[in-house]
Structures are given as structure tokens and as C-alpha cells.
Image 1 (cartoon, rainbow, N blue to C red):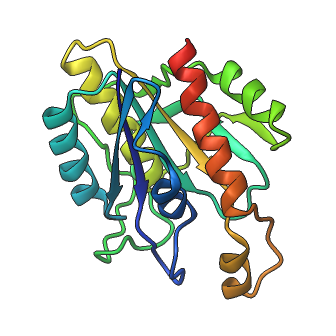
Image 2 (cartoon, rainbow, N blue to C red; image 1 turned 60 degrees about the horizontal axis):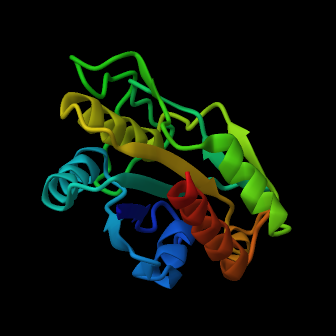
Length: 202
């Protein structure tokens, strides 16, 4: 099985991104299953271009995208991506799309094809808080989740694809100067690796 795992570069005032740091810590292989790791730009159009390039090149069986959600206190596995970009802050190219369709020919939304409940249960078994989320937002995270599912449907490929949000790292909380929840890098990495192992089992 070929697994593509994506994360994001830092954005806004943050100098690091929890998803990118966790991606670095993931193994390149679990059993006989190879993991391709890609850090995407936090830019709407460029993220699509890089993602689709790797999807076409790698032809994965599984796509797991990771992003950070400042303010969330647990690992959240996203249920659905919606066909809209509606940014509350600029991306890293200073773009601020407002109520813009991601794909004119795409569905209003696409449901994750990952085993959501199994992932949440497995992560909780490792003593890490986790739940299913019903909103991936309308920023670049939702955009990438939507694009991966759109690609799978348009290619008529039986690809398992979905998105996982992770909390801030402690350093990000310190840098923000706000009282926000966080998880350590070890716990975030463990949760993502557990999710991947669960997908492989299913």
C-alpha cells in the first residue's frame, strides 16, 4: 500500500506548524506500506498544484492530510470537506478568497473515506484525546481535503482520503501569547502514526 501524507508550512505569525513537525517525525515505511511525505505551501492555489502533482506522480492508495487548528484541544478527524474558500486571514501569498468555489464542477461537499470512528478509538486507546469533527473550516485545510477527494472521484480511483487536525505545539502557544490548548510533538506524532496503522488494518 502506498500512503501519501501531507502537512503545511507555517503561516501567519507562527514560525512553526505542528503538522509539518509531526510529518518530519513519521517513519517512511510501516510494515510493507510506503509513506510519501509532502509539506504543502499554505497558499490556496499553490497547495492544489503541489498536491495534484504528487497525487498523479505517486498514485497513492491512501491520502492523509494533516493541519493544525489553534484552539482545539484534541486530535480531530474531519468528516467532510465543503466546496468553498472563505478566508478569515491571508494565506502565505496574501490571498484572501471570500465565498469562492474551490471547483466549479465539484460537488457541494465530499465525505472523508477514512475509517473515522476506528481512528478516533485507536488514538484514544493510546491515551491521546481525539474526536470526529464536522467542520474542517473554510481555509487551506478544507481546501486541500476537498481537492484530494475531488481528485479521487474524478480519477475514479478507490483511494481512502481524509484530513486530521492537530492542536498547537506548546511553543506555538508561547509565541502566540494566548492561553490556548496544546499537545506535545511526541503525542501528535503518535496519534498520526496510530491513525495510519488503523487505516492499514482496515
